[in-house]
Length: 279
Image (cartoon, rainbow, N blue to C red; front, top):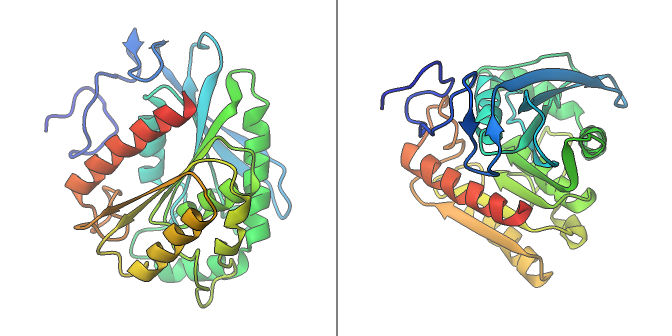
């Protein structure tokens, strides 16, 4: 596939009729025209240490308030993949934000996909309460913005962020939550400070979408079945999608596990689902 202009997405990502920095640009999502995308970082006071929140918004204020999506990092930080994804989601017509969840260990922490041993000490020290503090701070600031509709804020997390997105569904007044291959919801993970949240699903008050790879060695089929069964028994509005040929991290173009066919299908499905939920 030929990339156009200075498109930050790698080969393999669908190229849409949106060109950052050019004018005018018609968003496929909400009908307003993009001129430029403005990227910035704000620092929020959070227990433990200040937290940076990455922001991706149109440079020209839109007419009316935008729906917002909080993109929640994988275990590897707010890295180039997550930032590219934030831009891609913003091009759909959303205000997009991504918090740095490792701020208590340092600012701007990113890790390579072969550096998981370096991440283990961080994951050993973070707790459910810490992640909730982080997401409450991010949601609080976003919901107060004049350009964001506070009733149309969703979370979309990957890997570790998928678990956090479901925590948000349990604890925050959000409109929708998406979890891509979020593990650790059913059984404790040795050496990790955060704990399963399946027993908190009764407090979910928004629709949830959970996406898994059928070849994911870290999330066994019985865990997926337990999550789905629990949500169904509670009468929660939910969808579970399993891509049989995909493994853990299949959506990330920088990982060896990247599975293009499944990633493109998951993107189309998730963005359609979000559009329906956020209006």
